[in-house]
Length: 211
Length: 290
Image (cartoon, rainbow over all chains, first blue to last red; front, top):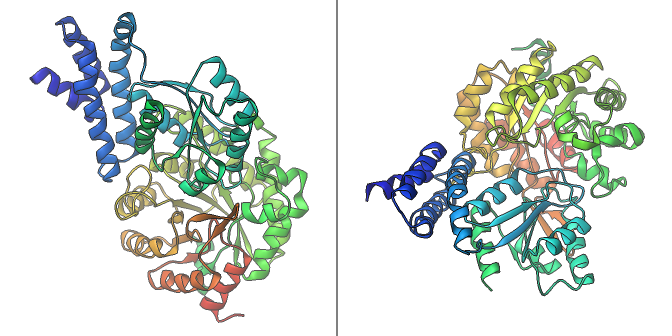
């Protein structure tokens, strides 16, 4: 069906204006909001992710696609909420204490939003206490930590320790990422997962929140 | 070619310096502490790093000003002019007439395409930093570790208003062949854009290791008539027993430096993970010095 195909293409090509317009038209024509998300938009973002993993897409393509997805989701989300549907999951995300880099973190946040997560972005240079408070207050089941520097990645360990101290380790999953971060480091500090890029982060977040 | 580069390149390749952050940590910089603020609080230790590179054989030393722009400093906005000026003065003192001082200008850390900053914000921040560096007597300005051509061009334009020679260097670590910038640009696209913006030299730094930069260097060489500047990492950082290590040895790096010279590099040094030992090995390999 051409309308659906064009929404798929609009997201794939990062055309936020078209994505929004087509979503509006589809909804007005009586399309089911849940099936727009499940059958068209998420497959489109999956294809964006596949192209990024295959090095056919780069950061700009990823960002504009996530933006188109978000533009469309903003129209659909209120309808889903009204029907009592919950977001896929709620994630607290931030760059750890001492680190001011937010490009990688913003990319992951954009992709998570694009995948239907509710994202609480705490920004950069975030203290362990701030992560803990936000996760508690917002009842987030997932905390995502970013660090770009070998000198600041140790702050991730501090967040893990603080979670344990607060007795929250069972209720909150932690995923980490950033240039110097590795799976080995995630294992070492006891994080639940590591991803090397924004697309893999979405798959990981889905896995961790599905449990 | 700019007269300064012409003079320097009579002894080609020019040997630049290695990493600063890791050296400052050896001298007590703690995780989370802003390295550039040490220009004001611990100038003698910053000078120690520059001195070690000069002793190792660097013809060019950089300044501890990589993040000294208003946007990257964020809330820590110190006295930008003082931070940059001290950075140049410290390196100048360490150089003691044996090396030239090229001032380091890193990225803002924000993405233009995501609307996190505007072109005007970037122009203002880079102009402020470049003029502080030039005013303190830097020999050249180095726009480095850039991931976005558009931001690099804005920084180069700002740098050019000082009248100093300008080098523009980007990171190539993405794509199937790891020969693209984060935004997907090829060495050819980078060379065309930055040559067109009026840079006096162009290049590549940081990235995944020295092997990958040999073909990138060759492609930049073919794509521009300007001098080529290369400063690779000592491979990828790895965790070993809770410590960060880089697997490349100074000797391996030095043999890579020879390949870079063959591939047309005019300026050769190291980025993350390289130390004065690496530069000593590079100087020995390229100059027969020991």
